Image 1 (cartoon, protein in one colour):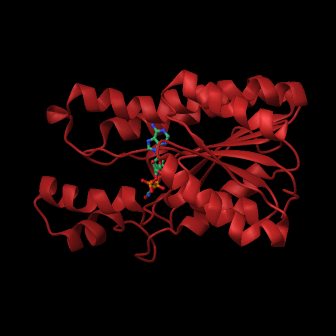
Image 2: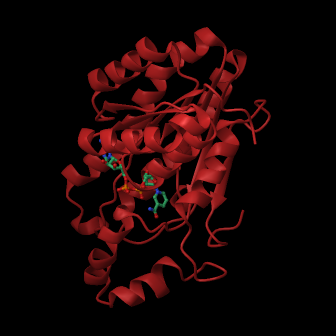
Length: 265
Ligand code: NAD
């Protein structure tokens, strides 16, 4: 594993689920995760939990910032506060996201725009805010949280699939623009992970598809995996830390699918 000691890593949406596990794992390696989340109370609780677990062991600090990733001023402030406190930002994990399921024919335009804003505007704004510091330091590792839905489609998820495909485009452009500054960009693409985001969808999909919740899990979510297993937050964190700790930019622009074989490239 790479040396994360002293690395400052902004992780958006890190108060819950996958982002929180990424923050925990970074701290375990000695990095300083900045928990940037809409939900400041939960972000502060996660930062406290991380400090209690790792401050003595790895020396890791953790910092909570209130950040709605769709709000440019809040994003700029969260990044500026991080740099004011720690002097730099080495890693960005753009992870905040939501899910809304509906067929296209019924999809409210407002929900389409909301979902695209969180996933795409959020990735753009956080990247832009971090880049000036990364370029100045000639170091940066940017990891976007994609999905199998960055490469594959499912019914009911038009804006999510659209946004997750879009992140691959953003990462490829950043890979080109960031190269001369030693800034890499990658996308991690998980299959279904049992987090609040997925727990909320199970009854919603059951209702839309007129099947039971057990059938949503077995015959929709895990149908194409090789082992009928959910992907875990730790398995996703493994892939994120692999890219975030890369010692060179050789892998820049690449995406990695972590899905128990649901999608094979
Ligand atoms: P989650 O609901 O557990 O956590 C999402 C976090 O994002 C929450 O803490 C929430 O407060 C935060 N958030 C939401 N909107 C925000 C905003 N506008 N600004 C800042 N923070 C905001 O979800 P999760 O399952 O951990 O999902 C994390 C990421 O992983 C998302 O991008 C999601 O699309 C992606 N993903 C999840 C799965 C899965 O099966 N759970 C699979 C593939 C990809």
